[in-house]
Amino acid sequence: MKNEKTIKTIIILLTIIVLAVVLILNKKLITPPSQIPEFIYTLPLINALLNSASFFLLLFSFWAIKNKKIQLHKSLNITAFILSALFLISYVVAHFFLPETLFGDANHNGILEDSERQSVSSIRSVYLFILVTHILLAAITFPLVLLSFYYGLNTQIIQHKKIVRWSYPLWLYVCFTGPIVYVFLKPYYGF
Image (cartoon, rainbow, N blue to C red; front, side, top):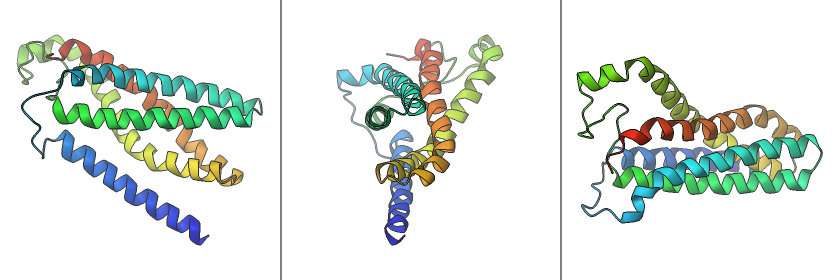
């Protein structure tokens, strides 16, 4: 029990640190260099691909556990976790270097003008709903996934099943909606 309390404390601290780093870099509280490395422009697509791959791995993982293929389930989840970790690193790097992309900003000036807002008005609320739920649920999912892994890797199956009832659908949703956000924003990237 003492070990579990330590792990939960570490998970909470790690969640706070990750959220703080994302916020600091996303809000440009540290000024990015004026020269942007060329590979940075590929990161939004790479992020969408990493999320998509994680989504499919999670679906296969669910199939594997339902078919009692425990080792395959574990391998698929570890792979999805690694891809999600790579996504998080890539996401933070991209948002540190790249300017914010506004849905509907057709002229790429960083301002959503009235004419641009009107041209996307019918779909903007759908985009914003997906974006907001994606971001909020990603923040909630992070510690739940870490706790799920702790229980699963330590063969605490009852606790693992209890937490996975929440973490799995949330993680799946976050991995599914990430690429959707990318598709929405792709026409408005100014690069």
